[in-house]
Length: 316
Ligand code: FES
Ligand SMILES: [Fe+2]
Image 1: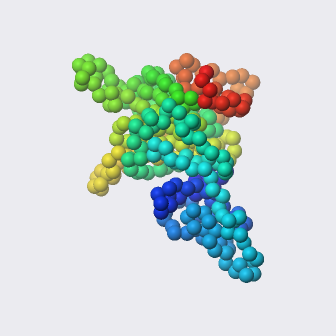
Image 2: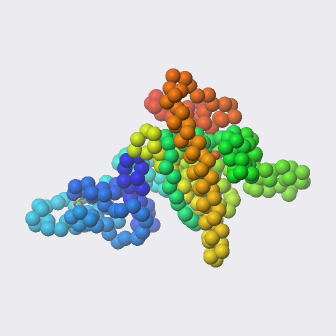
Image 3: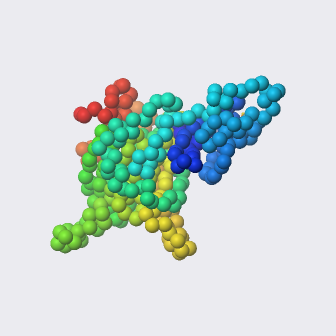
């Protein structure tokens, strides 16, 4: 992955442990592995063929008798902090700085674990270029825009401007009311199926949205700042609880995933790019965020706190 200008390798080793390291050869900083996924026993640099094992240890320096001796430990790949929780791999970009994930995720962790993402099957990942990451993110955090921006997609199944909101430190859970709720309300309580009536979205600060909850399909969007302030890159992964097996099931799952992705691209990301283009004209004014856009408020407040050197974990 490329994350805010850093090239990163994620490896699951033979022991099952995840490791993260910079995808940069320690000889002369060549990008070690090309983009993509796969299996390898070792990594070999295409420039002068230095080799590393999958833990990042330098194992081979061709022509070392002419190059000069190289201390294997001093020139291993740079390891980054990497831990898993709730089926999610977290990586820190600062080598040597502990992640302290249990503190960071706090009360959100049991809810994330309950989603059992580790038991889902990865179906497809797509990339989506967008404007500034905060502008992009704002679109994930409220249901106020469903009716106006998504009349023929999201708003077919979701009520507009109806949601609950819970927060766990900087993290958020928004639950959107689905239209299937209406018919359910007329039924006796023991026939209610809450999972079928709610669109559950967790948002893990600063840029991961987990949409789908207990349902068959979960869409995880990771919004990463780009190389410049006006750009972002979103990795959108579709996970399925039951892997499709027949060609018909696979085609159906592909169609649904593509449809979802296209709605984001053609509606949300198009609107957010227009927001980005509008912002400079209002540079001497301010935006206004409503009470019904509470998660947007919370996100901006958490960013403000971080910029001010305050903790986002403090109770407020
Ligand atoms: S830069 Fe990788 S071997 Fe030279
Ligand atoms: Fe949207």
